[in-house]
Length: 348
Length: 171
Image (cartoon, rainbow over the protein chains, first blue to last red):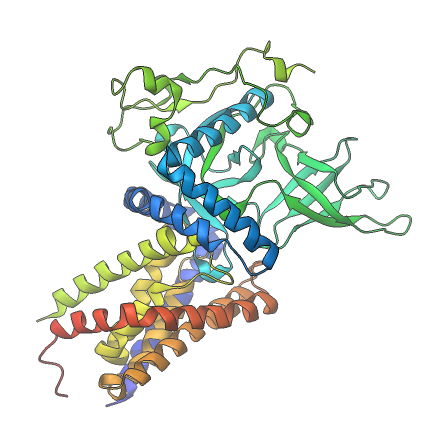
């Protein structure tokens, strides 16, 4: 028996069911029953994913150092240098230092931009046959996350949250073609940036009179009510810009500041700054400034929950607040809060 | 009936494959598109279960991929794709019983169908992410990766699945 009427009937029924599901979900726009199914799936499967990621991460870091050699020769030499450096580092204090650096960068962003962040670890990346650019992070509604919040890292805009489970959430990355964000230039002109997967992002200005030139840095414009995007987050620098005729809108391409092939520690903006940081994050020098920010654990914002439920994994062990008191507060989520406005880097 | 065992096997293998896809393989950032272990598992199971079992396996595996994080597409899309993959590969199950080559070919076919169908479906549904260009670049990668991974996945899955249905073999 290879193929019979009954077989084909069953196949047709299954395909019809799938079509029906697609149609229903399409009409519900990601809400309704399917929304709650996704949230439940995220809550159930998220912890599993996180546990797996914790096991896999050291291996992944090692393979990444080799795997990112790429095809061209120049990269190869750089990578070899990096590998030898990495090998030296590996013997000493390997990944902790990296994490501290990432956390420091986040602190800087939080202090200069006055964002209130919840740090999170990227634990999974969307497969989607290479079409879909999403990631799972290990923070969820228990940590105060909601859908449509800005996600950033020490370098700039990473994406926005879409589905938020209890302890994990899905992030739509800024390089996904369905990702659009309003940006602002130094002179106040605005534009729209769209992800183009591994290629540079595309930029389209709004005002026909506005002009950009290669090298210009762009920051997020900020959405209405600061959702999904808060203002002032660096997005990328202009690589190419078209030279339009008078009256035509200028377009161009943008290289994102964030390295999307090595996403690690990110921050979710749970509270936008009261005032627009404008270009502050573009101009301030990078890590040489010692940030006077303090990391304060604010357990009030976290509903009790299970101790393992909202743990940030290895991230937490490096946070300064924890090092003084080893395991006294297992349920507190460290929120990176901006320092008082007197911080040196924040003053105009 | 060995049905319960089969269903349990499908559930465990599909969840495991999805975990491997999203936690292990996708973050490694392979050039082109990432490998898809779920497709491999569906193909391997279909080679044992035949067209009907393959279609059911594919349908539910796809549904899992549609719903589990970090998926961000319409529910039912992968279900439809993998259902067809399971069916088509299932049609080969008698021939592929003793032929390694045919099993490999069917895996390649499965990977190809999955990518093309998923892409085309995206085009029909107005998904901005999928263009003809993206599809053509990702197609060879997904086939090559899955064929390369097949020897590590398919034999194990097939022998596990065979062990659970000894009486159906002589048909």
